[in-house]
Image (cartoon, rainbow, N blue to C red; front, side):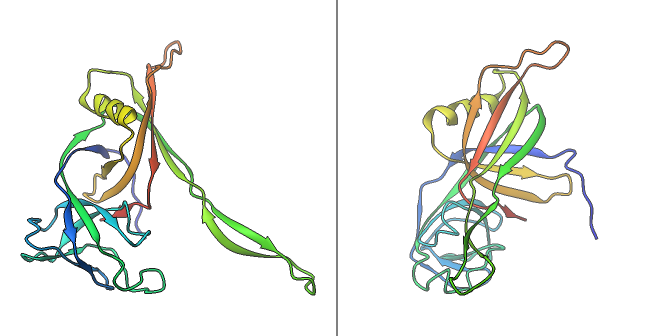
Amino acid sequence: MSLSLPNGAIVSIASGYGTAIPVTALTNAAPPAATATAHGLTAGDIFEITCGWSRFNNKIARASVVTTNNFSYENLDSTLTSIYPAGNGTGSVRKITGWTQLQQILTSSTSGGAQQFLTYQLLEADAQHNIPTIKNPLDMTFEVADDPTLAGYQLVSAANDDRLPRAVKITLASGSILLYNAYLSINRVPSLTVNTLMSCQVTLSLLNEPVRY
């Protein structure tokens, strides 16, 4: 059993992307191996995936087992061909070239992500049953001490305005990292409560499930 605290975690937002690298083949494996001629990635590089497999599309992953024309999507698993049809994983990746810390986070919370069900009953049955359908959208919210001069605040503000997704990396004190891809929005109107730090809310609307390393 392992227990941990989030104390000391650092939240960073992607501040730069490389050009799209075409992926011409992606294997059904764990981890899947991509073919991308002269891709230029090195082991440990973090990238955004654009892919024909919906459960990989918009994920943020890390490169491993790198050769000149191939690399693997570390810790991902595409072996189940009913979900990942062979030959449909092609697309592209974009290397993340820079990160900016979102500083002065006071609290964090998550909402959504609950599994939804279709409830049905057959005419001849005396009980209802559930079939899983979709999951609710998942959001993360950070309450951030108000300071519009900080680079992280300014980057979130830009993402709020251009409405383009950004990769988000949470580095835990243990060295583990969590990688998200999300639309970022900010409520620029700070809270005004006596004897309480002025703060604003930053919301991450996730585009896919996070990846953990």
